[in-house]
Amino acid sequence: MKRIDDYITSIPDFPEKGIIFRDVTTVLQDPEGFKLAVDELVKLSKEFEFDVVAGTEARGFLFGAPVAYAVGKGFVLVRKKGKLPRETVSKKYDLEYGTSEVEMHKDSIKPGQKVLIVDDLVATGGTVKAAAELIEELGGKVSGMLFLIELAGLKGREMLKGYEVRSVECYPGK
Image (cartoon, rainbow, N blue to C red; front, side, top):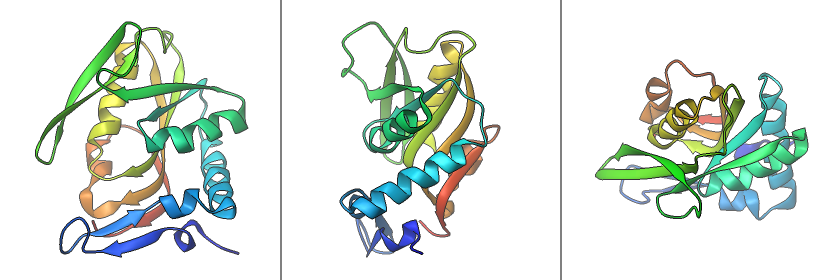
């Protein structure tokens, strides 16, 4: 039986020497790989009690929306600043070089709602932490965080301390 790792393409020295880029596009373009990825995330989601799934732009949409569909829950978008049409709340966070900002519709999370965050990859954890803070600002509770891939060498779990984090595939390096 194949594992998710069998569908992920590892590209050495990209974007710079010493980094191994984990490409999930090869998971998405293979019907069996994509199905396996969603099925594994759905299986992990059963460890949590939640009312809605949230996904971060853009690959979190690709994995989070099918998980929400499979478990019969709604899906909430966490987007880059300036992409949502209605009233929003936003959160800035640090990148390796500079800052970025994510936002959600102000009415996307109801007070007391339990939210499962799904994304393709956790590296440093900054984007997902910002998403979690937005959910909490809106009165929601983050039940857990699911990732297809975890790059343990970048210590995202440390950034996400206090949250329940699960990943399908974990790589020790960067």
